Length: 314
Image 1 (cartoon, helix red, strand yellow):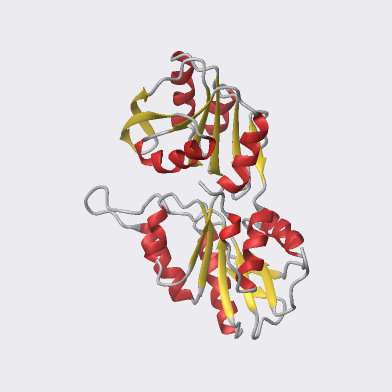
Image 2 (cartoon, rainbow, N blue to C red):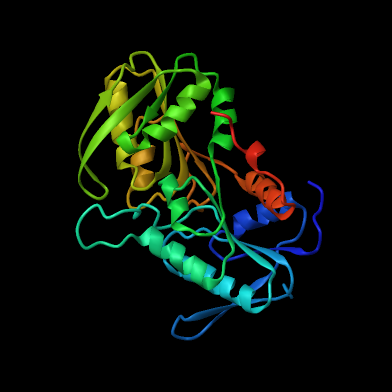
């Protein structure tokens, strides 16, 4: 990619520096340095190691747990604003707290709206992210949001598999919209793994809606957390006669016993993006980088060009 003007700066927090370095390499300029100073009680203070006065600054940081990652992003935004940056874009590959997008029971917060308010109050002027848990979260912001899609990197991989009896599966009713897009693109059937939860991260029951006999199933989801849904779905799909079961989940949260569940499951493979670092490698987990996708989006935003070409027409 052609090197951009020196008026653009790319900086990163600590959580996803590995991805930020890939993005900077693809973009064609070095990643700016941010120093983190720590007090003895654990309090930290980020500082920019170069001038950003008058620059368009892209701050790259996923906001997965712990919440220090979100706080660090907010503090770098504030530091950038106070250093007289011209334009500040928060590049958030994984937007944490996005599962809390509504009141699903009394007396709970809408945390994703609260995070949107915090980012805006900190001084960000644009958001760039990937596969929000609920696309309507974009409406929580009164600033521009570039909502990229992992389909851009997942679809070429699925095409390369050349599966003879491809069928797309949604892991639950809420994921049908995303799965329908893939099914339309490949012109194949879609099935739904309808689940009922007792409580968060605990499934009470699951059933398959649709025919999977002899099919090569590809489950599409925005994230994988404990992997309980995926592994239970894979077991059920095989019991219903599926030939193979793969899962494509954008964000590898992978908490609790997720790795053990995946490795002992009947899943052929789990394909994820590098929006969150893996805690360890696994023979069943394949990581696809979204660095080029974000680099192209950053270049388009900085150059005031459309990002439409970065989306797969589904």
